[in-house]
Image (cartoon, rainbow, N blue to C red; front, side, top):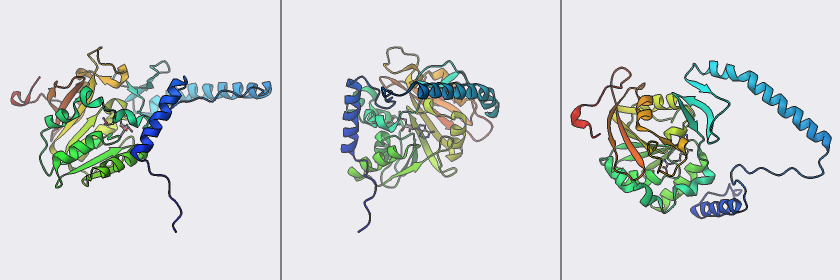
Length: 302
Ligand SMILES: C[S@@+](CC[C@H](N)C(=O)[O-])C[C@H]1O[C@@H](n2cnc3c(N)ncnc32)[C@H](O)[C@@H]1O
């Protein structure tokens, strides 16, 4: 008999994780960044040792700070004073948000999401055709991959990319439950989605661009994976609207998105404002130069 493998992450385990997180939250602890309290009785000498090590490491980090900035070819800057929801790394004036960990995967499958985000309406707006190849970048549990898979049909394919293997495990299990066979999970890296060159008709990025650790490198690689004329669609919570109940670093303004995309071989096509909380911002891969030219009037909506 083969030795038992690791326990697969099933939907019921996901629910268990959710309940554990809720219990932890009720107990006043942070579920994900839970800090163990110091055991009483630890000797003063050990505490002193910890203080010396802590100060030493802080000193080394401060010394290394300017080198990190120089080593990043000036694309990014690092600021010690920053939003606790961010990583202290800034790109074009915007602080990059922390990645949502797989421990919070239940939030992506919450039933209220249908009313809050109207996912079917969103996918409908993409006007996908049967047989198309779609990349769902930062796919998470596959909430959109499953809808995209139905839209492109059995002759099409969804390349569901994520950097967390745990998310891809959930995505596989949830897709299999529905009998969807045209979703391919792809483990990407923080700089590259690992997609074949010029293979994708449409790349969808829902609620993920703002948490790319390397936005420029990721977007350059995504552009390389697009077919000529392929569409890149960013769906982000509206940063202009204080009524959208999402932490500021996890929202984006349309102006900031356009500014960051203007450096890439992408032309803005339209922004669709039909969802309750999110922008749908559509770009098209252009064949020459960096892109950033205005879309023809016939294609513009806003
Ligand atoms: C907030 S979740 C959104 C998931 C999904 N798009 C949805 O709306 O249900 C963001 C996901 O993006 C993934 N992610 C973050 N950085 C990434 C990167 N550079 N490449 C691919 N996935 C990434 C995270 O692991 C996480 O699963």
